[in-house]
Length: 447
Image (tube, rainbow, N blue to C red; front, side):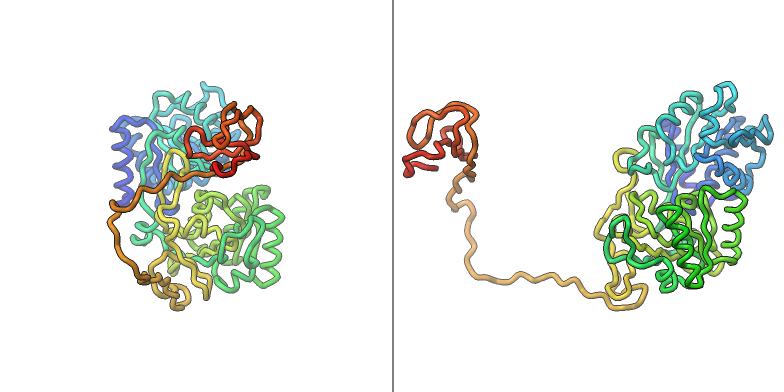
């Protein structure tokens, strides 16, 4: 599979990182940008040089999906390590494994590797990293993620030593690799247990007839929302971690075929699930960090035949905190992993509730003319200009406080002694001798 120009650029940047002495670069590329294609290219290049490769995924159930993607990209000779299974070609140059499985294996069972790849690398934690990196001390490492930020908002500098930015959402949208996203949101960020509308009402108002994924805060919430949507004639089912894999796959297949209109879920569809036919993302829960927000919205940005745009329905107002998907962001390995470059670059239409980057004079959703943000002009008040150098020097600013004396001293007003623990007035900024008794009888000398 031929790389797109931005994928070639990302690949070159990763190679340059290794060439400059880094052992563990982290590649950031938005959801839908083709991280698996770049991974497959790196794998084939390594195998062509006689190297062995290990690809790690963070959940056992994602192994099958990763294998399918790699095979579609031309990497077919694989060893597959998943839970209790160790299948495929035992002498294959490429192994795909769940991190949980490997960390529980004896060291002599772990596959050989000269290149170790971590997919969805934002899930890698220090303890797991120490186990894997310790065993593969002589291997090169590569992390891949759309969101270089852990669930607590922190970066991944304790694991990776260089950050490679592959492309931005704006660039991929301009190239047609992603579709534009229209955003409808609450007028402000709400509390975690609040939504501005029910998901059913919001779907009927802004996305009727299109396939949708709804992110909920609990299994009970997902089932309640599904019941409400079905009651409104929106064919909806629930997917959750407790379902058998075949049942979950069948539900998602029915969504893909148009047999149902929407699925509700909690946690399981945030990442690792790709269905370009789904164009509507409904946030019925508030993601705390930008990484989770971008992963959720990224589910609906992939292009598909007849798909002109995606729709984000943000019932909790999270967009006011994290910004729309296309907003420019700053990524870092240290401190906070993802930051918005400009917190004031969005506007919301007061007529329809649409949210978009600031700039247009009319709402791109409903066409309503946006009110101009008038700036008051200076008003002449009269007077003269003066030479600042000719002004008298102002006296130092002092503040008088009523405090308890910590040290013995003398009253500035009556010159009698002040004992430790006595109530006094102290003029901060007044220099030495600024204290006096709180009940000093000589008022004329008071500060």
